[in-house]
Length: 349
Figure 1 (cartoon, rainbow, N blue to C red):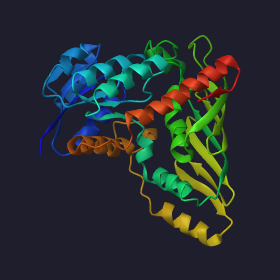
Figure 2 (figure 1 turned 180 degrees about the vertical axis):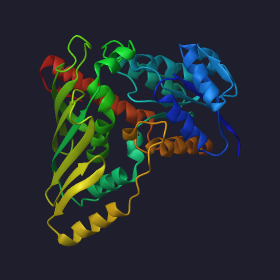
Figure 3 (figure 1 turned 60 degrees about the horizontal axis):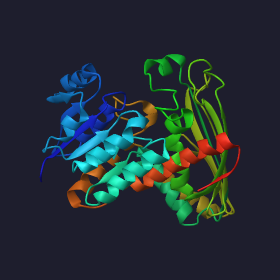
């Protein structure tokens, strides 16, 4: 089996999670690191024994040995780097959110069309966690009957110090938003994963807890209409001091209901008691993988599973579980929510 050589562009908070996920896959080596701050690349390189470091990502992409590149930079730089990596013949893994602009999506997807032979994946690791896959399949199999409505909340805390630590955070130009595009985007993506494509959105956002610190939103509410006809609401904030990280969903169908807290069922009921027992058993058989020690706990254990799938896709010339095109649809939905909030009108996708 050919050894796969990987490079990491962006050596911030998420980079160690990518490195350790790659190192769990047999015959995979992380060879190259890149960051605008050389000290960050050197610190990670010294820790993991990664020999090559640079501040210029084109230098990394020009190494003919590099097969796969993880893009772990700020949102605003993703499109340019992803397109350049694909044009250099590299398979690409891009962290969430793929981009914050429609033009960025166009740049990425145009490069993808030029290189259909390459693997391009966006990181949505929670799709790989067993309970989330079970819930999606139960909905798809009609166990809930027709889904009528859903809710999502994300309550977390990002301090003023967090936003001040990096110049790109809390800016429209570089982060493209805050609590929706960053802290809540994985949960938001799972709404699509569970319920399918969205037809239209309306939204309202505000900066309620970080005034004078960020220019973007720290609190947002969203209404969604899915193509299936189901309706949903989202409420998210990064100003919660009493609960620093908690998320939950409800899904109501004609035949079943579930409260789903931090990716495990906290309450469920069905019109058919036998179906309820069957579904309880399906969830009970799931084992949630623990997050990597270098990760934040709420990242979950999905990164190693998704990275392993991407490497397998590279080796077997197939599409990854989460394609770049699919990740782009979640980015498109996020952009539509911000547009709806600014316009005060429903936006149709």
